[in-house]
Length: 248
Image (cartoon, one colour):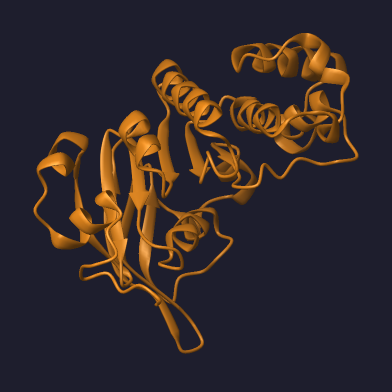
């Protein structure tokens, strides 16, 4: 579904992506791991056209992302942002139905609200949450609202950017399980960025490690447990000593 072919991207003298090659199969849940500042978020932004690669090619469902009609193309994607990115001035249902009230996906307000409530139920939130504002919700509830928004337009591809950031271990587990259930239930192609190895073990079909601007290793979740690559082994086990540099 998604193919990265020799992707390079620099910001001035900061060479972030240095020849990324990666394939994400249709219906697969790919998790990208790697240290902070290694370019994981930049990689996702190149797919969406928010960042233009210096060189290389990205294909989505066989189409070069630079040759597609933007509105139609972006309607295929859902996104769960790291910080939730809810609109404080809008009630929850309008946040969830944001895309359903604009552009090619526009629906009548009553229909959009009904869909929003249905998606809120799917992530375990009662209908009465729909008319609250984000500030009235706990962090875990806000994350669920963000997840409901990501799936509201029935996307084919969903990106999850650090989905458990800021959550306690119990709520992190709830969100991880919800993501896995939704990915399987909807049959979507998913790319997740995370530092949380519990998320990796719950969500991933395949894991790719981004290090020094390239894919250091890629394999199945089962392969990762047996992987002897020292970079992967250090990251998975959270060790300070190893080939991945740490600030002292």
